[in-house]
Image (cartoon, rainbow, N blue to C red; front, top):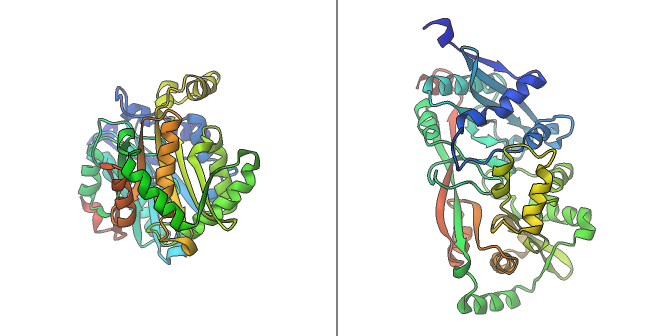
Amino acid sequence: MTKADEIDVREVSTPSELMKFIKFPWKVYEGNPYWVPPLIIDRKDFFNKRKNPFYRFAETRLFVAYRGGKTVGRIATCINRSHNEFHQEKVGFFGFFECIDDYEVSHRLLKVAMIYLKKAGMEIMRGPCNFSTNHEVGLLLNAYDSSPMVMMTYNPPYYAAHLEKFGLKKIKDLLAFRIDHYDVDNERIQKLMTRIRERSGATIRKINMRDFNNEIRRAIKVYNDAWEHNWGFVPLSEDEFIHIAKDMKMILDPDLALFADVDGEPAGFALALPDINVVLKKLNGRLLPFGIFRLLWDMKVRKKIKEARVLTAGVVKKYQKRGIDSVFFYDLWHNAMKNGYQTGEMSWILEDNHVMVQAAEALGGKAYKTYRIYQTPLMLNGATQG
């Protein structure tokens, strides 16, 4: 191997190196009509350890791979103290994995991540997670001819082969269900929802945008209670929840952000977002100077966005098993159709969350995408020999 063929993996330590890390995917997906470029300003904000509250509870490192002076891959590691304390694990995560179609490069990146996490005292490496289940997670395994919806991942088909050759094994699959408008608003479902709504004792209302900050505080209480027992759940601090909500506020459709109240007490929360990826494709990562106007124009004036994604729907433990979650799903899709959305996605849903899977199927949803999370024990002489 000549020096030009050697793979050099360096940790990001300067603003210019961070930009190389952020912009590398444009090389991988050049000419791919399905990939959605992230907003560069959004990525810079996410990686800003002074502004993003996530880093109060996590230690992360970013790495870029070079060969012959050219960028050929990237990877990040994360030790999420909130996750490990909550689950009593020693798990280190890898994420933001992107690579040219060359297994030697993938192997080198994954090995660097593994060595760092092992030296930091972790016992398992898991991913891809960017950086937790509260962010983007999972490796797409199918439907590569379909663009991802807002806050979902996309990757080339060869990534799965690279990870599995390295020795990573499936730990969990996540499903995305597609729902068409004509499957939802039929007479049988309307009658069923009326009975469930009356039996649940809950009042469903949309978010009050004039009281947004207090509404977010109500939502976080629901979130940290309702999802506590879900696989991979990581509790959110109020600061982090507000930080995430602030980014969503501009694109929020109030009819798609719903609360369930029982006797004046928040009992559940459900959220769907317009699929702004339709517009982000055109912006090619640039929001300024005119991208923000194009985004607002397409969303508010031209109403070009015809799809929505259900990000989350949960009910606090005290009020579970009353059917409130089913009412949430029905009302979300009913409101979405009323507002001009034609199709939607429920994602992600754990493959073994049978209640949620059945709820999606009851609304006519069909599983059309699978995302996989992998892991491996951190044995330096084991999984690195692929």
